[in-house]
Length: 97
Image 1 (cartoon, rainbow, N blue to C red):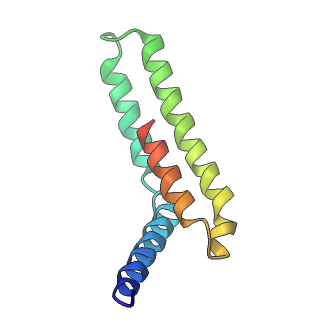
Image 2: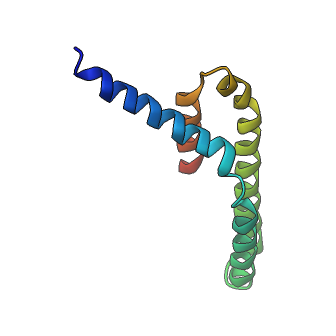
């Protein structure tokens, strides 16, 4: 049993580190993502129906806002030393969409 403790503690540390990275550092690229999305929408304009572009852009923006809301919601739990798995699952699910 003693041999599993270092691995378990390493996995717990990795989980905390990744969760804290997502919550504290990941939101900064949203500005670049928005700019790239606007450029992509501009390039698609005239080749794809405008309403498709609008739905795509609005859905992406809404998901980004929901992710930011999730971060605000989960930060108090992280400050208390819990919720790391929830962060990882939440970001994985939002990335899927």
